[in-house]
Image (cartoon, rainbow, N blue to C red):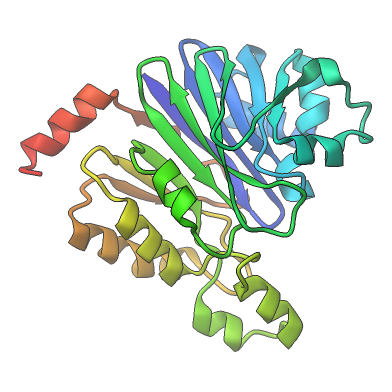
Amino acid sequence: MTTLTVLGSGSRGNAIALEAEGQVLLVDAGFSAREIRRRAEVAGVNLGALCGIALTHEHNDHARGALRLARHFGALVLASPGTWSALGTQDGATAERYVPVRPGGRTECGPFTVSGCAILHDAREPLALSVTTSDGLTVGVAFDFGRPTQALRYHFRELHAVVVESNYDEVMLRTSQYPAAVQHRIAGSGGHLSNRATALFLEELYQPGLGAVVLAHLSRQCNSPEVARKTVEPVLRAKGFRGEVHVADQEVPLPGIVLPGPVAAARSQGDLGL
């Protein structure tokens, strides 16, 4: 059994906990170490079992607490060489705690296997990540990218759960107080994914084994949970998705999402005639 807990997601911090076989892997650690420990306690996540922290990229809202947490708990930091290089002078980072994640490669950490796919964003070497547990269940995490590439579609082709950004509503962005240059950056290929683009991306990713979707990294100024859900969920339902659609919150952890193993997920979808 694998449990997925989003400790928080938004422009001020992102952190996800995966629990399997009594061990924990964080995907991103974009709050202070103290705040992540507080949120984990609230959510019932045992960071004492932390084996690693996998990072999508080096920006503060994704990596702020990673090195301090890794040092405190004796955990590994899994990241692209570019991300590690960007963090290397911060907070006493040492190579002993670092394990590289390269596009197309596979990196082991306890019961978790982490794989990366290069994405378009204005960071040193950003990755979308997929994490496979020892029972064959795979969770995808993709933040901060303006366009899904064919490589990412292939990388995410057999997910059982996905956490994906649904950053902004296109009309709300165009009518926002952001300067034109900022709007262009957000909507550009190296920026963020709109609700509509997220819906289309998930429509392409859908297959019967996909059981849980989490919409994440919502903009405070140019989006809302209601707007994101209203845009994305009907597209998924029309495709045949029968799982849960969750919307991550910036301030409060989501309740843990218990993910069934691949066999159970396939049987459940089969019972629905899919």
